[in-house]
Image 1 (cartoon, protein in one colour):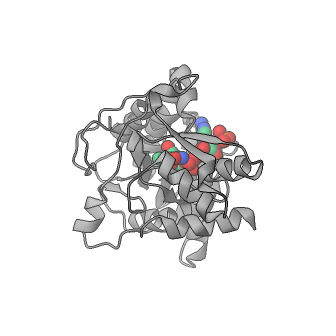
Image 2: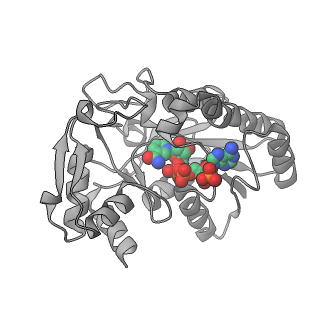
Length: 282
Ligand SMILES: NC(=O)c1ccc[n+]([C@@H]2O[C@H](COP(=O)([O-])OP(=O)(O)OC[C@H]3O[C@@H](n4cnc5c(N)ncnc54)[C@H](OP(=O)(O)O)[C@@H]3O)[C@@H](O)[C@H]2O)c1
């Protein structure tokens, strides 16, 4: 089986390629932005024609949430049109698409965890552009929505907090935005399973257990052996300057489709956080 991974230089993309590589039955090609700019239709058509992948795991995206808010043209070009290009090439050459999407497609106002069949209503340009990507896909495609992704190979909150804490800096993080932290090794293994089985439809895939950014940072400090008192809770309204993009207040994803399909869920998030902290400090 041949598999193409887009966004392969990103934090999730790198662990996806590693996970697929481990399976001896799969021939994996990881393409970063330089090899495969998904917003370039000709480039996508040529690459997919050349590789003829059975499965395309489409992890490429412009993920700078505040950047997207100030440059919507680029956000829609990469995240929505780029996914249109992938879907079109896949349709033409007979590949199955697995698209990685986000909890930010929801407005976070439900006050409960979202199931796959809830109505999206993104608050930000990033969320709208990623939902735009979902809308480009053929019905048989796989969509994996995830949240608060952290891995060893990218910039993320765990890396940031470790750097700031090592300088003894006091941190302020919001306690009124809630979600589920998700770590790339576990996420990559679930995406691989769903993609290779060509499961149709939307799956929420996160580690288990809701927390706020403040609660998450407390846990990161604890795992790193730093004083938890280094972080102070604030409200989103107190952020100075305010972030350009609005975020959902409660975008916890219920992994309902996996659970109801009898698939094993990713575990609670504290243990994989400990593993990542160890890897980053090591
Ligand atoms: N990070 C999160 O918290 C989070 C949460 C939910 C869902 N997701 C989704 O998970 C997926 C992976 O995200 P990630 O955390 O691994 O982010 P990431 O580290 O930013 O990886 C995304 C990769 O896509 C590449 N890319 C950007 N524009 C591209 C283009 N036009 N053509 C091809 N590649 C392009 C980026 O390259 P450059 O760096 O060179 O621009 C980057 O290597 C994305 O689809 C994202 O929307 C992420």
